[in-house]
Image 1 (tube, rainbow, N blue to C red):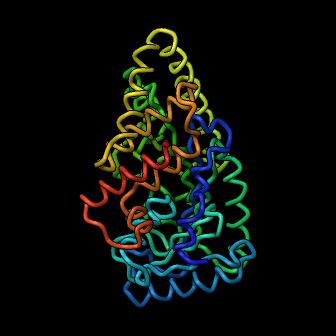
Image 2: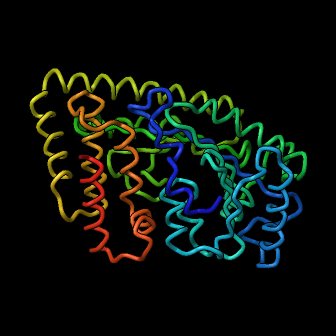
Length: 348
């Protein structure tokens, strides 16, 4: 498997086949782990980071779950390839920076990904389509147990798993769910969601996680701390809250179709018309309009396009994907032209 092979594959988080996938795009569970006896990365010198990299590479070859995975060293690939992996939600934006002794492990289905030397020595991630966070936990727990047979992870009987950031200490777990909430945004209810989740110790971020804006009405909701609760308790809290948000978004969509149908239909077809005729379009506008069309597909207003195609366009229209498709570096203006061409071809 090679990075370029991923371009011809469908990302797990975009399949739209999981539970409640009309509103929940994907579910992710991540574990932070550090090798015992080694300093955290913010205290590690280049030699130590290189040792950690080699330990991780050796560990991947031993695990039954990770045999045959692709081990990518960040300084062996181009900046476009690194951005490409971020756009596919296989690694964080931070993992693109200061790339010496950093690596990424991915399986051929893009369900498993492991960042080596990001903030912690290992950041293990499982990604599932739709509202499937407990299945993601079951999978990552098996991988974590398997890796623990071959490596000692930093652990305290008092504090649990030790991590570079105190908020991850304890279980080292971060569960997150990506939701598409256009109805709550249109009706100005999204502020209430922010307030509700903050009171419960959760946080809301944008499409690409920490430090990103909630473009296209996409929001990632995750726990902020992992100390003092078990993994299943943490995920159960997230699951209960997400179910409430799903119910609110669903009922608001129904309300819009009852009380403001003409306005909603007009907004959806205007978005479709713009994307279907535009010759130049930037990434932000594309995501915003695709979000409205996705709502139209779910409401049965647009029948010409399926949800899978819309989901796919969210990724294919991103800068690195466009350049990978063209197999060359494109200027921002050239990308805007190619993006419009791609969207028109997919929608028609």
